[in-house]
Image 1 (cartoon, rainbow, N blue to C red):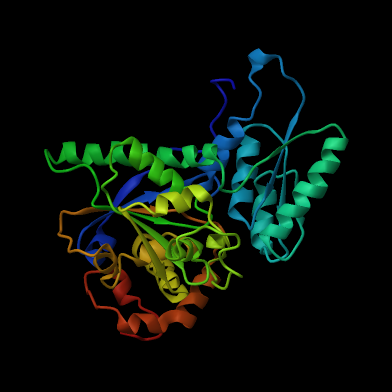
Image 2: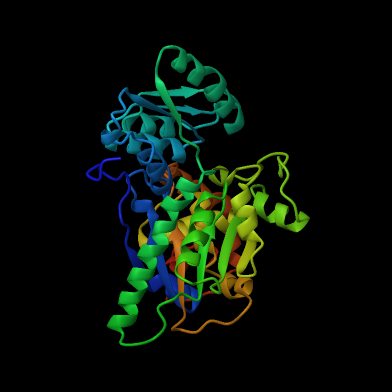
Length: 367
C-alpha cells in the first residue's frame, strides 16, 4: 500500500454544543462523523478496510481490484466514496427496500453499478457473494468483498475517532488550565457492532476502560441488548427488524461487539423510535444538523433527563460527555416533518427548559 494513497476519510471536529449542554445539564461534546465524505462514520471503517486491500506497488502485483459491498444504504455509500478516492471500481447491492434517494446518492458518489436484490440485507448479500462475485471471478476480475461492519480492519478504522477525541479533549483541558481530559461517558449507537467495537478498541488504547460507554439501540433493532440479556450470541438474535431505525437493523451483532458489551463499563440502553425521532428534530433545531433515526437515538439521551437516568448517577455543569453523531444520509426535510407529526406527542412529557432552543419549536403544539 503506497503511503501517498489518499485516505477515504477525514478528521472530524469535536464541538461543544451549548444547546445540548443546557438540555443535559453537563458539557456535551459532539463528534461530527456526519461530516465524513459519505455522511457517516462508515467512511472510516470501510475506507480503512478497502485501503488495506490495495496491492503494494513494491510487490509487483498487477490487475484491477473491483470492490463489492452489500448494504441497506450507508455502508454502500461509504464504499462508493472510498472506491472513487482510491480510483477503483465498486458494485453495491442493496435490498428492494432501499430508498430511491439512497440509490441515487450511491450512484452519484461514483459506484460502477448499484443493483437491487432481495427483501433484506441478508438476501442482497447472499445474491452478491454467491452470484455476482462468482460471475465476476469467472471473467477474470480480482474481486474484493467489503463487509459493512464485521472485520478487524473496520473496527480499527472506527477506533481512530477515539484518538481524535482524546487529542481534542486534551486541548480543552490545556486551554482551561486544568481539569480532566477524559470524558464522563461516551454515547455510541449499535447496529452490527462495527462502530461500537472500534470505540471500545480506542478506549482501551488510551486507558479509558473505566469510562462508561452507553450503547444505544431502538426497540426492534436491539440485537445486542437481547444477546446480553440471554448471555449468548446466536444468529439470528432478532426474528425480524421492526424499528424504523433500519440502519441499526442487524439481526445479530458481530461477536466482537457481544464480547465488548459484557464489560462492566458498558451500559446497553434501548429507546423507542419516538425518542430517536425526537433526537433528530431537536438536533436539527438546536444545531442545524440532519441525521437519521440511527443517530437521533444517541442525541435523544441528552434530553428529558435520560442521560443521568441511564448513566445511573448525577452529572454537574463541568462533566464532559461525548456523543458520537454517526450521521446517515437517508434523511430529508420531509421525513423530519413527518417525524414531528407522528411522534410529536412525546415532548408533552419532556421537562421544559426555556434555555434550550428546540424547546420553543416543539411540534404539535405540545408547549
